[in-house]
Image 1: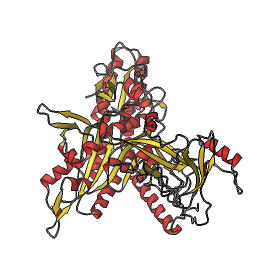
Image 2: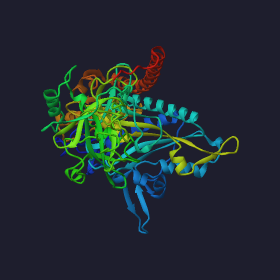
Image 3: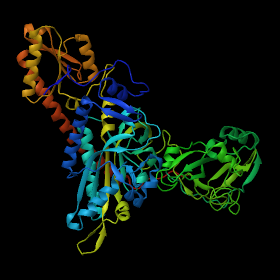
Image 4: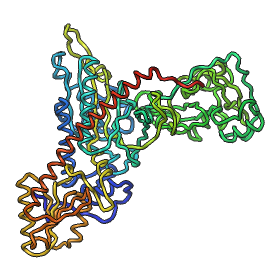
Length: 634
């Protein structure tokens, strides 16, 4: 049955919603696809559900192609499995907690790894049952501190989450690759530019993981790419670590007066003015910056740490927090406050250093301060630095890593900057922003071990199952499609994703024109083409055209005065074309256009997989030809 504007539950709006920052938020609201219920929580209207349903259909198609079966879990879950796995604490404040009338703990599920694991444990017991892949499309909940950008970052959202279960790592590798291909195909069919990038597992744990990034300036994720094909989330980029330098002949460390030099810039200027080098001028890269940060762990405890890094680099707090070096689970990392510094008088602001000799460190878990000290990987043994002497107005010169100070570990905390070398030697990095629309993980045995998921192997021995997890943000994908496909006047959906295949506008008065619109709609529907018919009697053609632009169906047929001459105007908004066609040609031409759009989406999926395979083969050939990647000397 055709959707009719005269009865459709929709109201378009001329003004943007209050607080809307990005195009998808503005247009989905104005065009009547969604309505805000609360911060980060949205009501879905008929047009929105129509597009969402088409996205879900494509996702389901590709899951079936990959051999995954659909299940459906509740969103309200008991807390016990999450306490057993450790994620009750690891999720921290992002987790929605609640109690029932008997004071039992429950959560609104942020992800479902635990209950998927327990379901398989309940039903399967033998290696003969594996491999298994199951998935759901389900609403998730996270108590975002700052929900923003409409569907891009909400507190309630729809995800597809799939899980694979295998008897060994080889099986996991195969399941992971099948799901990776499914994602490439799904995003290509959805028309979204998508880049698989290396990522960090974060609180999910496991080993291999990739994010699927939609490149866009509205995204909150920063990723990098190189001319040679390297791509990674900025949190997953690893530094090229120089070789250690012999320091037997290095000069002894010495403390110098450097008054009024609390910043790197003032320190470098003072060093060049009062303590010049013979070979070259001092630069910020010769200084060791020590940044005091506060880590808030999932259980709420606050820890003060210090991160040491070359002075020409800034600390990337998000990158540091995502490394897994700061503690189990998802941690929050922020710059230390004045109160934090006041509680540690040994930290002299502007003049903080690790200490002048190994036996009397100021920083580190072995030091009296017990403040954890983590270093950038570039600070290798034998490198010489200017750094704070832990006294106002004084710095240490020629402080040698490994000889005069050590750390509790290394951390990738420095900002990645334009031109940094790619870790695989494939060229200089460029930085871009994007939206994470999917992520796949080789979970391994983390959750299976925590929840005792075992099956009997071929020898009758109990073996822990190995798992993969594969998430895809369905509502976030819809927002990204709206970001990618819109004009100044409204949305502009890909033909196969629009809420209806054709928008028929009755743009004239009189029974003849109205009847022609009804007849055209019936003929299109008989051919399997869905129609949104604007049959409103008391609305002007100009208003109808404005609504059509806003709603965004790319094929528009105008039934107007041309009916008397046996012609209709057919608009292809994607190609910005208009043409007048004889009545007899309108339906077959439109049907062919719609069918081609669906076919082209399928062809795009095949092409995306082929291109990815070709890129992988080229990269492998390049690695074999080049041999080991050389790292630059210090």
